[in-house]
Image: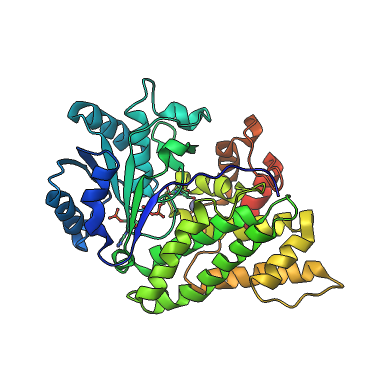
Length: 390
Ligand code: NZQ
Ligand code: ZN
């Protein structure tokens, strides 16, 4: 295991009616005037908006709203939010929604106290060490942004999708009420489950040895998702399954299962170009990329892929031919993704063979960008994976 530091001080309030704590938590973490950031309207339809605003009104906390954040969030509303924060003297940013609203809130929080262009953080790999405090009310278990120090934004000029990171972005608190996720359509639910599973896989496929504790945490999260997914697809109102998936999304990505080990993140980087070019759901893009990445990297460490197949997918170990066990594990993963309604090819996302050179160029590996920790992704590797996924 490698040396590491781990500091993840988000306050989580989990369960039914946990949103009633919003007002007191905003005060506790220093907020006196709030920018509330949310998406395209689901929270107005399912009552979450009313519950959140009632909780703020209860504590007499003034708030300004920024709505209409779209999936694969864009830079435009970030600039708008930064301006509102400065003009209105906002001292707390509250995201209500999923990764897109939360990541926008984080970008605004960082940009509002930075003299330059907020995009510097995303384009120059600068760590974010200062931001307004952020809180979240989660409505979809997926991105894990409610516990992560990360934010992913697409710059409208050129449609470049990039991430930024920094401990200052970790939410001060996150409200996790599983009931808020019961109105999710089955497709979005499945996209979220896929994202959660790939967050684990990005950590699981490592070159670091002797990481049994984090291996087992990863395997536990993956097995739970395999078990809970069909329950929520069959019954969207299954509270206990929603609860397990919601907390699964948090532990999959606040890095508790990734510390002390080299991580990969190639599937994410390769996917981000799909959601930038085709505006597909991030989880759907991952469903298409990750199994092909797995096939591509199997030879790099056959026994790790076989371990994944045996421990997560229940395959029998073929000691004479471990590569067959590895392939069987990937096949079961593909079948699982199909069973929850995920696409298997880039074509299903609207992509075409002719786009491959563009996707490879957007990924930036030919210009020196480092992608992948398990194996380094070269332009040839990227092309091969996009081609397999087509
Ligand atoms: O906009 P509204 O109307 O709210 O609808 C949303 C949106 O259309 C809908 N939705 C959310 N909660 C709902 C609901 N519909 C009905 N009932 C509910 N309870 O779901 C759609 C997707 O929302 P979004 O916020 O985009 O989902 P997600 O959480 O998957 O976020 C995806 C974004 O997060 C980034 C992705 O790249 C993508 O841009 N990521 C962020 C990460 C991070 N910050 O740590 C890590 C991830 O790997 C990921 O890259
Ligand atoms: Zn993700």
